[in-house]
Length: 124
Image (cartoon, rainbow, N blue to C red; front, side, top):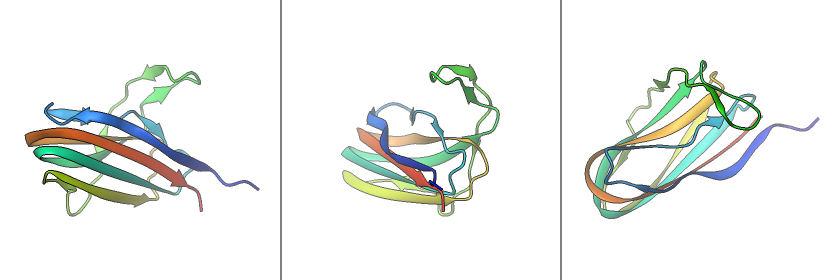
């Protein structure tokens, strides 16, 4: 029996960290037990926080067209993932999230830069 997996893909591509926030594309994590998000940044001292949001009410059709924008809730992560410094990276590992949809949100405090994010996942 084959196991479900989500191959690594770029969910934020060269996000402009001078904007007040950056929201990744929405990813379906249904039938996955574990997933990871890796963020990398470079710029003029960007500072901000990263949150992971989930939705049960959001939906897309088979072609990726949004059929319901749904509502989004932030998963509590302690400590809150934060971005600071001219360059850096972080990985957020998560497991057993019951919602089928996920997205990553960066909220700026100060500075500018470029943000990239990758996501992957697997069933155990």
